[in-house]
Image 1: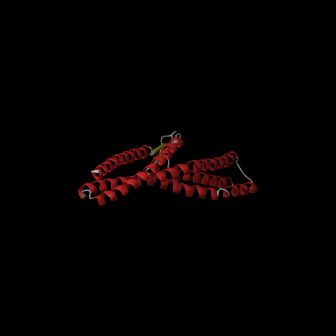
Image 2: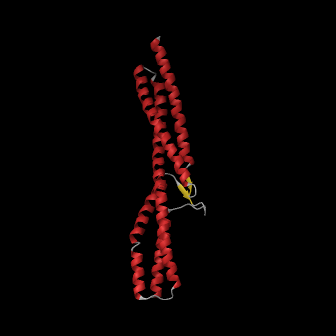
Image 3: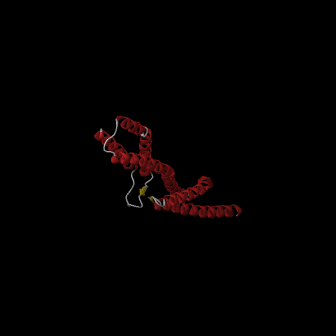
Length: 215
């Protein structure tokens, strides 16, 4: 009788734990899905919400391990194979689902961690190049030493542009792999980092052509 009671309590406890696990998986996946479209003005709040989701994910890892162990014990205790298989299949589906969403979450967090630094860096370089462009615009002609100086200044940005291009490729890939879109809150347009880099490169090309024209 005691053994029967123990098995009953064990299965009851397992059932409650499994329900908590199911509910947690549903909540976490919904949170990740609902935070896939990011506005540039509120990206930091989204980042904080996703960090909170990551902590929730960590709390269900021990529950998964416990359930996995209990399923092994139920099999050894002689639980009906049909019942056990149904539970096992459900568990495997949930486990696979949480693993998929965990990978998405990690990439989305990585994307947002890189986003701020990359954006600041790009804006800074663009601003400096725009200043050069404005200076040229105001000059009808330039001396050779001024042109050489200008070319040297542009060359100094070559490595910066390469770094921006490389990071832009990484960010676009992370966006795609994490099912994320980043929307410019001012224009309501989706941001593609490679396009942003191309705009900076176009500015460099414009400066080059102006220098040649003045010369």
